[in-house]
Image (cartoon, rainbow, N blue to C red):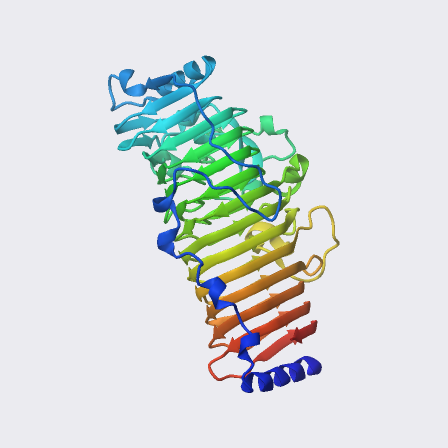
Length: 512
C-alpha cells in the first residue's frame, strides 16, 4: 500500500499548485442531466423517439388494431357486480374476428381475472376505474405463471395473457388491485422454495388456493409468452404482488405508467422476467419494494428454462419511494445482459442502482450500462449484495469459506456507469461480492457525489473510478478480498480529513 499512498501525496501537491482543471467531473456534461419534473408519466410525448443504445436494439412502433370496437357499457346491466365474463367474452369475440378494441368507459367497474388475447387492445377511457376482486375464486382456475421466478400453475394476474401477439393495455384509466380481504389474508409468508415441489414438472405444480390455506397472490399485469406488447398510460395502485411483469415476452413497450404500491410487501413496480427487446420510458413508480427490476429465473428451475433478460432500455423514468431505483436480481439464472438505463431520476428511493444475486441461484448480469442519472436517496447510492441472508440461503450467505464454482455460482461483470449526480446518500458505493466469483470490470466515469460515508469494496476486481468528485464527512475506504481498484483523476472532499484505508487481503489500489 505504501506506493499508492505516496502517489496520493504527490497528487495532493499538484492540486495545491492550481492543477484542478485536470481532475474531477465535467460539470458541463452533468448540468444537462434531467430533474424530477423533466421525466416520468406527466411529460410523456405521444410518439416514441428512436433508441440509441450501446447494443443492437430494434426500432419500436406501437402495435395497431382494426377499427372494430366493443364498449362494455352496452353489455352491462348492473355495474355493482363483477363484469369479468363480459369483458373476457368481448375480448374473445374481437380476437376471433381479427382484432379490435375493448373499451372500458368512464365509470366504476368490478372484475376478476381478465385474459387478453391476440390483436386486442384493452382501452381504459379517462375516468374509468376498475376495481379487482380480492376473493381467490375470481382468479381460478390456475394458469401457467412464474412466481418469484419459479414456474407454477397459480392465480396468474389481474390482467393476464399467454401466447398472445399484438396486444395492448392503454388509456388513462385507474386500475385498483386486490390487496385486501382474502387475497391479503392468505398471501404466502414462507420462502417459496419451501412451498413448491420443484421435482414436479411445472404443469403439476398447482397452487390455486384449493388445497392450501395460502395462495400466491395474483400479479397486476403479466403477459407471458407474448410478442408485440404495449402497456401505456394506465395508473395502477393497491397491487397484491408485482405490478407489471412481462415474462418470456419479446418486443415490449411500457410507457407513461403510474404505479403506487407504497407500503405493500412484494409491491415491485415493473419486473422484466426473461424477456427481450423491452423499452420502458416515461414511467413514474412509487412502490413497496423495488421500482424497476430485471429478473431471469431462480436456481436450478431457472437454469432449466435458461431464458435471459436482454436488450432492455429504461429511459426518462422517475422512481420515488421503493427499495431500489433500478435493480438486477436477485433471480438471475438465465443471465441479465444488455441493459441500458439513462436520463432517469431516483428521488426518495432507498438504494439507487442495486444488484443482487445468491450463491444457489445461478446466472448473473453482464454488459450493463447506466448513464445520466440523478439520485437523491435514503440509503446507499450503488450497491451489490451477492450473498443474501441466512433466512433464504442458509449458511451460503456466509462469505467464507470459498465455495467451489458450479452452475449455480452467479456473477456480475462488465458494468459501466457514467454521468451520475448523487445529491444525497448514506454510502456512495457498497460492493459485497462473492469470494469465488468477484464482481468484475466496473468503470465509473464523471460522477459528482455527496454521501455520508465513502466505500466498502469486498470481493471485487478491476474497479475504476475516474473524473469524479466525492464529498463525504467520512474518510475511510474499506477493502476486503479485492484487487485492481483504481482512482483516476478523482477529487475527495472529506471535511478536512485525510483519506484512509482499511484493507485486508487486497492489492493494487492505485491513485492516478
